[in-house]
Length: 255
Ligand SMILES: [Zn+2]
Ligand SMILES: [Zn+2]
Image (tube, rainbow, N blue to C red):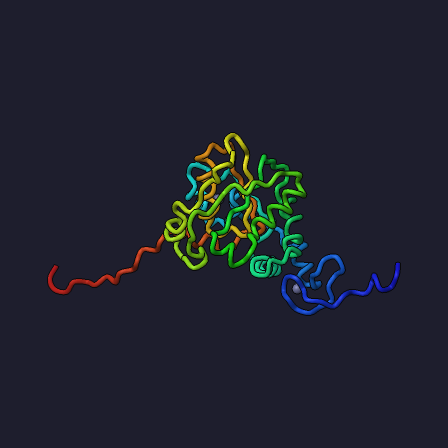
């Protein structure tokens, strides 16, 4: 082998941005590469249906928000942290298709034996799409679909601009923010089809659930979700409100 093929390149790591010796095919520093190889979601301690962290001794709070089982299963290769978070932020804010290309094979593998008729990316609002010029969920959907031999259908549309979900901290606000936000494009046909929804990160699940509601209302036979990562804080949006502690004052005087 020629020596120059063995010498590592010095460049910006696609995940952490540091200048480091990166691989020729994968522009990742050794730390981030190691992270990506070993950071797969371990389903042992998570809800088997939606991959949320299960609060000790309590049923899954994300599933509780979807009693009709509009989303039958969630698949994701990673938790949203470390190098994975770095790659997703890069994908989101710089449109780096290399970051998408690094995430897509793991996403395709996370699907296991699951099958679908169409792959549907979660759409961005018109304003954000204009600002960004691309939809990161679409990039991931296209690459994953190609790896699995599936067809992408960009059939959902955000009919109004919504606030950034990350700016809202309660699940009620997140749900309200998305009410009526999505619709099916007029020419789209989802009746009887098994839909694979694709997003970059699943946090509270409110966005995917709002999309699944639209797809089911138009007769989709099944809806499953594939995300590159599950945000570890997903559970906190669903934690039951703590009862406010009131100080107990003892009444003075004769009882
Ligand atoms: Zn790195
Ligand atoms: Zn669950």
